Amino acid sequence: DIQMTQSPSTLSASVGDAVTITCRASQSVSSWLAWYQQKPGRAPKLLIYRASTLETGVPSRFSGSGSETEFTLTISNLQPDDFATYYCQQYNSYPYTFGQGAKLEIK
Amino acid sequence: QVQLVESGGGVVPPGESLRLSCAASGLTFSKYGMHWVRHVPGKGLEWVAFIRYDGDKKYYSDSVKGRFIISRDNSNNTLFVQMSSLRPEDTAVYHCANGVRTYVGGGYYAEYFQHWGPGTLVTVS
Image 1: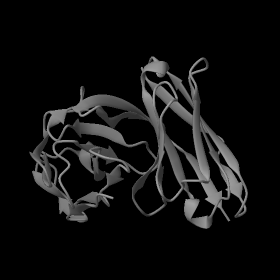
Image 2: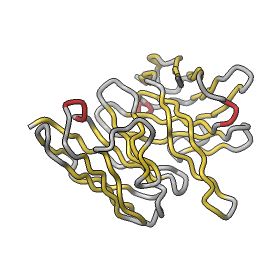
Image 3: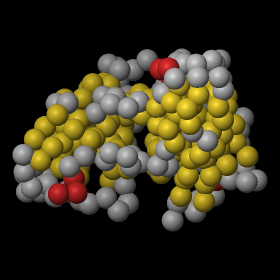
């Protein structure tokens, strides 16, 4: 199975800041990587697929980059609604696997 | 808009069975692969099972293989998972999600999860 490791696991930031979350795969997943946002008690929401393609309706302050084994999610100009947990997920091969999550907290 | 709504969760003792459903609306259900993903309380997300748009291909995680069966009814826009021999470690919120298929070559397709349901809680205790 492909292991996905996110860092940091928790980060604190203020409204207006920019943050970056890293996701590393234990082997190449090409560009078959997605990012999701989840809030407590809610369904995960797709933000980015194919490593850098923004899902329709997602604000442009979210951006993704990377390929093969290293990927980043950057959120610029943080808004109050952005404080949540973020997961990366590889869909290069089954079993699809997720990172352990990165919780973004308000400083 | 797309709606996926899970049902059928509850509290069951270890070794028992449970069947979850996912009712879909707002999308052409029969054109999408469908997935079950679970979220263990206090932990992360785990992909559980996949069924192709026509029901002819199914994949499972090792943790549920041989105990869970995924199925679908395209005439009623509904996804199912029959869970048997349940264990305490199966306790989780179970989400269904539709997959968007991308051809990656070599006859292989990859799917990311576009829309998710809010989930249904299964407690094995």
